[in-house]
Image (cartoon, helix red, strand yellow):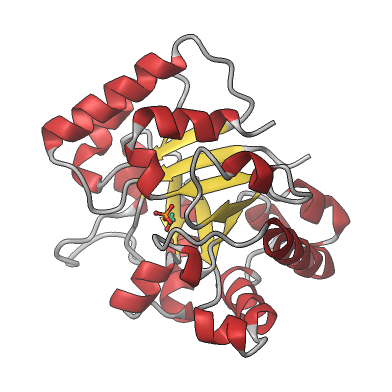
Amino acid sequence: MPKKIVAGNWKMNLTFTEADDLLNEIAELLENETIEAQIVVCPPHPYLEMAGDVAKESSFAIGAQNLSPFESGAYTGDVSSAMLKSMEVTYCIIGHSERRKYYNEDDKMLTAKVNQAIEHQIIPIFCVGEALPEREAGKHFETVRHQVRHGLFHLDTNEFSEVVIAYEPVWAIGTGVTASPEQAREMHAYIRQLIDERYGKEVADTTSILYGGSCNAKNAAEIFSQQGVDGGLIGGASLIPKEFLAICKAVK
Ligand code: 13P
């Protein structure tokens, strides 16, 4: 069985004090709860240390939103996998459509980031997903196949076994429009089939594949109950403590 995971991607939101409040509210809410899923909180880099401190007393893990494709050295502004690892960061989002779009992160760059993460025992949450024109042209499988193959399939079986995949259709991100349960189920099954063809059934059956895109407390249970959906990558709703908790609880 794949591990169930709900990860909150805070994106570029919140001041230091607001982040402190949110972390503590999440920790407080989790105190009396038994959640089936591994909860991962992914704040902006400057708040990772604070998040790590709160997480020590709570049940959630810490993820970063980005890491450098390079090991170390003269890369002004970059944050390396070794640095993240030294701050108890367990996961890192890689290949998010916002970084692909606004920072032109291509397959080569993403492969380098995945390699850095794996080398430093950070679990990549590797995002894939088609844009609306691709969906409308019936090319969504083709797009996702390309992203999965070119971003991840250079890994050997042991390395790939560490990876989490998030299917985030670009048209569903921040739009209030989620993929239908059917669309999510179909794409998750397709991704699992690709993994099966490359790494075999055992790996395919244990890879966590999360859904992301306008998940909220109202729609999470239906999406998460679909065959092959192992949890979610949550944007906007992860900034609202009770909403985030409700989404975490929707994983069965
Ligand atoms: P929203 O949940 O705000 O649509 O964002 C999804 C996302 O991009 C998570 O990485």
